[in-house]
Length: 121
Image (cartoon, rainbow, N blue to C red):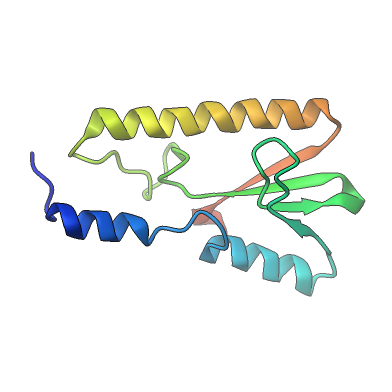
């Protein structure tokens, strides 16, 4: 099956996808701020460069996109019909990295929460 877009359109669409400051992440940050929590963003000194770090509570929050991190059972996680092997490899690598980072952070004494894109509304 071929892609519904030409190569240039697909490339442009993919370039517009953000990794930081996504709408789900911003909505979680607004909720935290309104409720009096203060946090750091994208601390690249910690494994996985967590989206939100609450140092006072030694807590980390990852806000994961359902597609990019393979949220099982979610309607937003649909395996593409084109380049299926490529996407499965990419998503499975993300899942493994997420697991490795959570384990490493817990060993360092952090509490780790994951909020999925579909839960952030």
